[in-house]
Length: 392
Image (cartoon, one colour):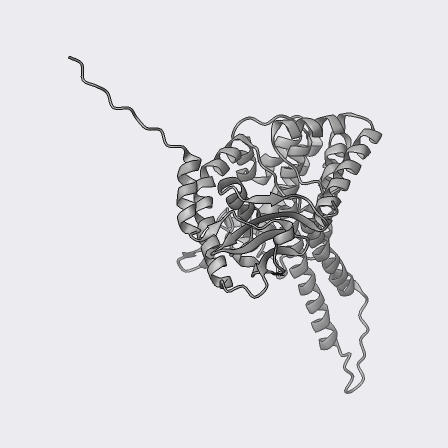
């Protein structure tokens, strides 16, 4: 006689999550009076750091707990309605932030409402971790376009360095009259001070440029519209800047680009790395060994002549001008020919999505005429403005 098999009960993940959230939200119910019977309500805005992602409130109360909600309204993106301990309440995402609506004279403490909701959101976030990881793995993500911010920082320090080196290059006015504040020593001090300011600003400029470049290449990779394989978004984000460049534009066989890439690597090794990594130089130039009866010798020997510390001022006007020239050449390559369309999308501030459907839309936009590209940008700009201002 065969043994009877026990039936394996399959638990609905959403039902399990709903049960867990219901415990966290004890006293929260989906009851809300009809419009005619609704009491007078006041709204207040909790501390923004307490609910930094208000969309999770909507997901928790509407999608998981089944609360009633309303969609787009004047300066309102959404509102979800219910009760806490029998008192009507609503949560709303408005143009000026996340708001909670309370019954005038309500007895339930705000701290109780917020505390329970925050606790519930933590459970929801844990449940959504695998969803987020899966979407990242398949590239179904959006990256906010912050190129304007990165580029502005770079140009801010470039302008300051230009100004300082220009000041240092002016012909000094020296007066040898007794008691004059413009004596030779004073002139030399002001000259050195201007050069040091140029050096400081130029190093900051270089650092900002490479940061802007890495961000820019991630954006351009999306806007080329080329399909991505699974896991390629993660590879793109974790890749070194020169590997990112190769994902955007072919380098092998392009002699001009190969030489330019070499110059960029020199700037990276000589300027950015030492000043961004505590003075450490990859070729050992930051270390010295003791040679008996002689003294301290750099570990990289004669290559120390290329060290950022070989000169009194690591960056002077000629070096700064050379860096600017190299950066301008890179900018030209990344905004012309086949990359003119992707650059236009990036420059317009489009936030790129990396899913296959959206990448195809980018490919179609840049493959068409200038009018097609303008139409795409006009549509995107209209939708962005509408959602940003909540003008529905």
